[in-house]
Image 1 (spheres, rainbow, N blue to C red):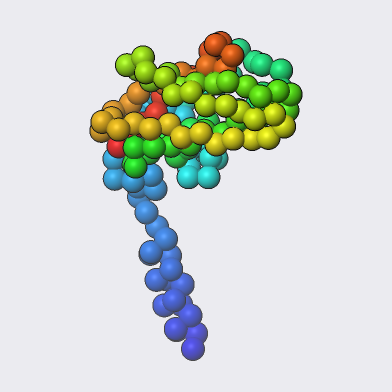
Image 2 (cartoon, rainbow, N blue to C red):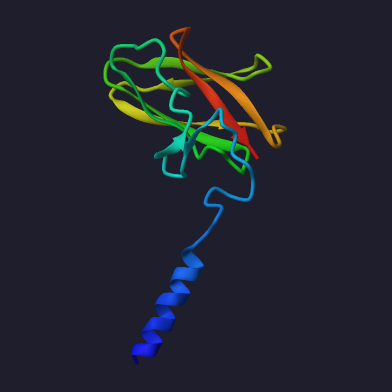
Length: 139
């Protein structure tokens, strides 16, 4: 019985060990690394800082997961004061407009079709003012 328990623990240990926890690719040093739940787990802590604070607006989570393997990642905001117009600006100048409702939070998705194995610099504007920006690694 004890031998079976030891074998079970050994098997669990071997299957839980992984030398590449973020996937089989190289993580770029420019990015802030986040997991699939939006938790920061390392990388460039200067990326995705709020640059121009707006009263009542909070960046709940920088883009996650980052790096992303499915050409999309999410970013979370909350507003406690007013409905806010925001937009994502992509490197080619295209914009993706969305709204942050009053007294609630919103998850918005940043898409990177065609960005294969690339790091892109993305900007988020709120009320036509740069709110935050940073790098996303699309793999």
